[in-house]
Image 1 (cartoon, rainbow, N blue to C red):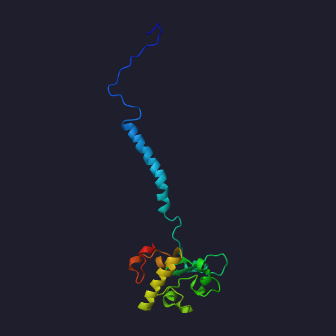
Image 2: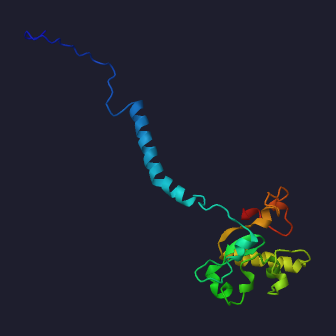
Image 3: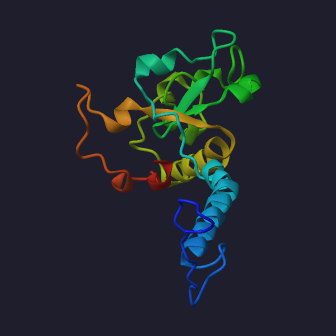
Length: 186
């Protein structure tokens, strides 16, 4: 007791290896956590933006649904399918819109017509049976160089993936489809 006070006096012991308050393993861990947080806040946002998956699900179009996008209604998107892939060709409205030269191709899967460079109504189908090697090469060239290069994919035709009764086509394997290089489309 000091000077008659009732509070006990504690003696200060010297700690042999006294450390600074901002050093040691605990502070190093805290600094690493702060550094990690800052780096992830800075670069993580860029990573998320660059590699964010599409929020739109893949859409399957029946023939009837695809017909609604034939360019006949002003303001409605214009869709067409080639090789079962549905493209939004609205930005090419001068080619595919109402009364435009290639309007016959829209609102349906026009694979055969694209392969044959034909607007004949009998060719406005997805059927590729009987096409020549040259026509199949032309189809692939136009599919890759025009449609995939210029127009966004908005979905796929249901007939490509589903049976007529709507059940999944268990035999459908993209890599096995003749003349269709579609592994990278899915």
